[in-house]
Image: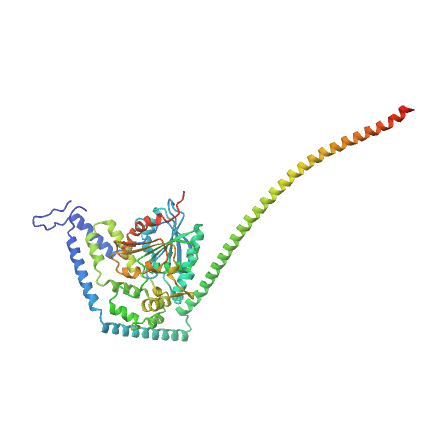
Length: 160
Length: 354
């Protein structure tokens, strides 16, 4: 805002006053008697609350009424159940993780097996080709053998 | 209408704005407190009274999410007080996914909750769940006030992947406090003891905590004067009313944790001495090795700078930064300024999404 705010000086003044008063307050409460009084106050208040609690529980037990304590105890059971579910959930995470890891490992092994099978298949093809070539060679040998035998027999006939 | 300055420099009141001003003040006095509109959020996990909220970034820029831990002694919605200009609102706009742990207000059934429970059963589990939910490898932990103290303790105890640790207005050293020195001494030598008080009440009533906060502030006419001064400005009045609601909306506190805080921290100052035990394990702040940012504010009316500073020497982080910003304990959060204070540091230490 470009215009002058009529409350600005009021603010500055109160800031100064606040600072001064707080300094004064700070110094004035820095004394031991006040600490002793506070101590007594805390003690008295605690005693009073303890008494009140005791009477409350007593009354409630005579009248057979549940108190806030009973409700709190019931809630504690629920919280325990909640904690157990959390633990279970974390265990499921671990299972999920190990499953994921196992699947990954399995995939890796499967991949290796596939690769190996392919290799074997290739080797197999190669071997069968070689076998075929060998069989052909064998057949040719057989043919040659037959021809040789034929040659052996024929000269006898010629001699006759 | 412009106000006209008279010759003797007495400001002439502008009727229009005066009408607005007093109308607004009348409204503030007579109308019920406003409803707080939070940034879009989803509850990820609930336990007892605590809720873990997830605020997704509209345009996510970093894969490392943020986990905010607020004080146990106030309500966490100060961080998310409006969609515009709140800490959570600004952080999500900057591209961070934000998780916020709201401790809730304990009931009688929670009277036995100690700091150990808050740390191990609530905070650690919540951080674990946030990491799981975000599917991130690491997380940045941001603690404010007592929440900062708990975050530091957790970081030193846990093996969860905490990448960055930010502690704002964090009380670590309790050898001094904002109260007069004779009172500090009375707390330290046991003259003032709250054990019986905590046992009697079981759960410390919210009125008691409210009274303590009011007492710590002394004469506190500042907010009221500010309202009167700027009541013609609707935006300011709306903000003021949100703040006013939060200030008067105190929480209860579990008696066991109250006793523990009074005895282990205010009386024996165990955290700095390395004697604090959580779940049977000693809290050794030198276990903190991640990047750490510690922020204090100049006009902090609840936590002294000297209470935060010792942590800089206690942690073993190589990458540690200390920042002293111009703000107050509450206003740092209220104005959302906190988000801008941490962003330059945090953005260079968060994993960017490509």
